[in-house]
Length: 613
Image 1 (cartoon, rainbow, N blue to C red):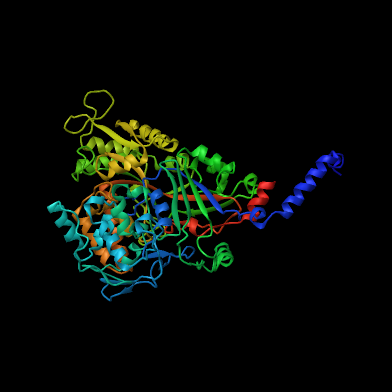
Image 2: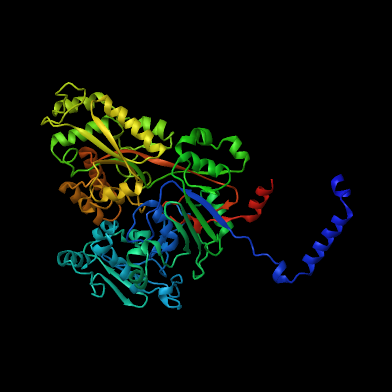
């Protein structure tokens, strides 16, 4: 019995009665409440660069772009192995027997998000929009970091057109028709390739090749990164650079229903597919993304309920949060949900700029220097101490579960052997000539290694480990600190000597990893600027073959060349530990569906009950 309630003054009780009567008599427009919005909140550990498919390559910008722009194809969200499916097309492409001609049928009735450039009219997506969008990657004006992918596909006439523009220094002639990229009619797109490309469809599922409208590009020009207008399920509602990104449901988005196919042997994914089947996408109304670069505040913000979802638990907290891979009991009581999965697209590397006069080159002494640095680096300590066991050692470039991955391969990449490193340096003339404790180059000039890095806690830990390892073999090293987007820009321009990054593949085929060493990819995925004719030949040979043993043999040969010449020190493949509160429904990590927020729901009843406790 509540004595305070029984003994309260009568005039307060009367006042309360009048309030109830007033509410009951109010008109529906006053009394009715707007339904609660479903809001998904989470944080990026690294700042975005902007929102234009043709201008960005970093993971976090691409994750946002995937919700704003749509490609021809996508992947089934739950299917394992990964499965292509239509996105803006009526079906998968029609492919010629020689794997050179791909015909896509655009689905009628898809519209771009509203924007003033359309003059108040609905703007329908047509095949010509994809012609324009793909051509943009070949336009030197946009400096597309994704050009290397589509350039390698050799769309008939496009590489030649780009070379002509580069030579003439004139604006790109978008109106000129090329044989390999044509709109046959309003809804039919045909792409012809100069060489067979059995897996070209995978490329067309990459959000880098999302569609844009020409009117938007011409209207916003150099400010396009801040004015994304696509056909995707979301629109950009707010952007404070490197601080906050807000997406809201696109009111123009077509009716698209959840139809993910879960593997028969996975009960958890089967339950998700059954629960959400037939729901209209997207299911959330709003996505709020913050940028929190330091691991501790990002974790604490999630733990304190400021965010609903945690995209990869920071490594520092793994021993306490998921000891032995299991959620800690105290967190289980809070109702937290954990999803752990190998990041099959991920490879952790430190690259050497092969065009740099100190660490670059293909002569024996240059290869010996890079190999010595690799042997002196303690990969086990990185994985065990810095990454808290959230990775597995890498033996080559190709990630687990990707086509061409060989789980039995053992290479020098995972070896930690400072004595062998010293022997290599001694053998090739990298010795301490002046007795100051540091080795010089074979010609007697100073030897100073410079590693690009970022000012965050994990980078500092990695730098300390590298410094310790290099000191142990007499190599002097300094660290050049900058924000991640700045380092990325410098890397693409070939201005860094060394940099440690994690590379994420765009599709589940091992060719993406091999592309890290393909010569023509310099300035794109090939941060090392490696350009070995024998390697390039192997890359091209495997690329033209359909999947099978012969292709896998060539892929392994190419991997071994990368190990031997050491343009990259491959360290490990990451394990992702994603976490969420129980009201986030339907999540699973699908690396190749970057707009996961399109496929999850917020259970408002569960959220309210948790808030009331």
